[in-house]
Image (cartoon, rainbow, N blue to C red):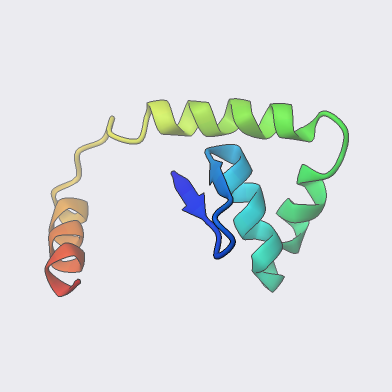
Length: 73
C-alpha cells in the first residue's frame, strides 16, 4: 500500500498504516502504539506477514465485491 499526501510525501507499508492512523480519530490507539520505541519494527513485521498472505484465500464472494467496487469507480 502507498499513501501520497497533499504535500507530496510518500509512505508505504507499515509507515502508510501509521500515517493513516494519525489522520483518523478512531485509530488513535494504533497511532499511539506506532510512536513507542521499537513498535514500528513490530508493525513492519506484521504488515509483511499480512501482505505476504493477502491472496492465500480465494473467496468468490470477495472477488464479486471487488468487481462491483471497481465497476462503480
